[in-house]
Image (cartoon, rainbow, N blue to C red):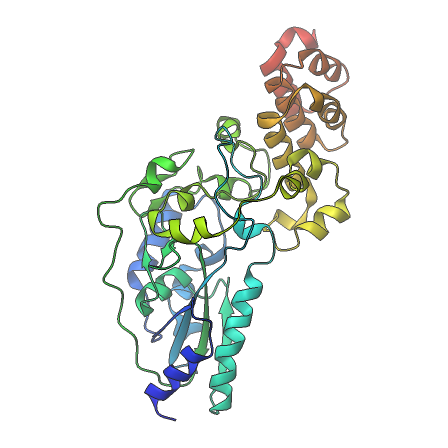
Length: 368
């Protein structure tokens, strides 16, 4: 099988809505400079992934010295239930679309199909996705499956930003496909759509402000960002929803049902046991796999979206053994105006962060 036939066989093995391209293992110096600049300026917000070792993540040959080509697939991930939502007052979905299930399952299936074609030809291959060793968006752009948008997301003509990138690294020498000549042009729709102005300039994201990143970090959530979190517990779709190339695919999907929305509501999540958190969110990037951070996020989300009927639930968390959860429960109670409950919680509180949150709502008189 010659090189052209091999690429044709690969494309025949993937679904019609999946874009496939090929690139070599040459380094990505521009991506490396950008990553190192984000780390140096602090705009990476302490994120790991490809930021941990920019030199390695932008030089595929360092991790795969035996390989000659990278076959890249841009896999659309929207499903029914992901369609446009009615106006929700700006609070956003509680869970971003990509995280409501294991959306990488389809990526794995697509990559397995590609790997099977390569393996049947006697070639060595390794599937790579959501992996620190490779800057997937830069690889996808060079392989021509899409372009890097002003939101920093990979965008394809057919699915917009609603894609996940996966690759198969192989020792087959397959001619590279051309990069895409399309771009965002004059469109800047994603920039004002960001609730926290995290897209500080076209193609530059400050992860310290990005809600999706904030919800994944350990520790106390920055107080000045909590209101902007809205009803979100994990992830944020605002820049994706605003991206015009993704409109057609999004509109084709049915909206989330009321039942599904309630099942993912912050108050529902706060009622879960630790085991239920782990079972419902096995694929989320939760620091140290600790459910406390999911609860922290849900407390902020319930403060932003709840009603007086939720005060009892929040009051229970104001007495939780975990000070991090008490702190965020007090904040949520303050937003809902339950200062009497906060005053009651103040009586025996000794944790400095929680005391500070209490005083922010009812003043230092509560501790005299």
